[in-house]
Amino acid sequence: MQPTSLNSVVFNMSESALQECNHIPNNRAAFAQQSDSGETRPWDFLVQTGPIITTAIHAGHTIRDELQPWLEISDMDRLREEDPLTDYFLPVGDSLLRVNRSRFEVDLNRPRDKAISTNAEDLWGLHVWSPDLPQEQIEKSMQLHDQFYAMVRDHCDKMIARYGHIMLLDIHSYNHRREGVEAPPALPDENPDIDLGATTMNHEIYGELLERFAKQLRRFPVCGKTPSVGVNIRWEDGGNFPEWLHNIYGDQACIITLEYKKSFMDEWTGEADILALQCLREGLSHAVNEARIYFQQMARSIA
Image (tube, rainbow, N blue to C red; front, side, top):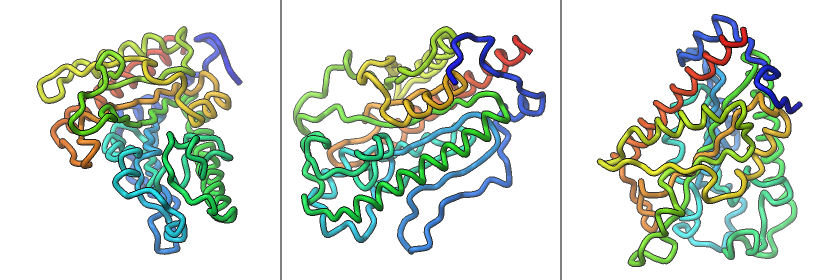
């Protein structure tokens, strides 16, 4: 279902649901998908009431023990291509989903058949896995992919049934010093501090929300500097995850992929700048609050 006008989007929120948009935590929230194997569980999902879902699907670094014999990349090189610390931003949402496993064990932003690959062409030229990685291990990663998407589908169905819509913020980060520690960083004009991926968004419905969201992000300095915020600057799409959500829910799902430049850390050493992270999260928190106000106004205008 893909409605194309404002009136065809269901924002039939009750007064109690509108109160929940003020982000009052649900004390009954619980983590899901715990592992019984003794290994780090694939993800943590803190389920709470409210239509705003935050995800950090590339934040994880661990890889299941049985895969280790076929791993060919160094730990530091692998970390540099992951999105460490993006889970720090999750508390701005209602339901929070953090993936703990490395994107190289299972990349949840790719289609199932590309979720794990031994082909360096699929991995920016990186040799991550030995070519003789057993098919049974590949299938285990694909099964995690299936479980993740089924879990997200179930939760989104429930939230849309309750609120008429969801807003999902998929949080990522990107490197901007690929040429080396001593080399100059990538050009700022092509690499904003925050790039908002909104390729699935219906701008007739959510265009004003996107503008207000970006404006709030710019309002809060990061270590004394106004962050640059772009829209669809670096990528043509947000990957499989937002495309999948849009194909299912259409305009009932407002999806923004946030790509934070790794200016909040040293991408070569992994050292974090805690003050920068705090500043960025404060800006995001205010942007999310602006989105809550926007959805309340939309609901009341068509009630």
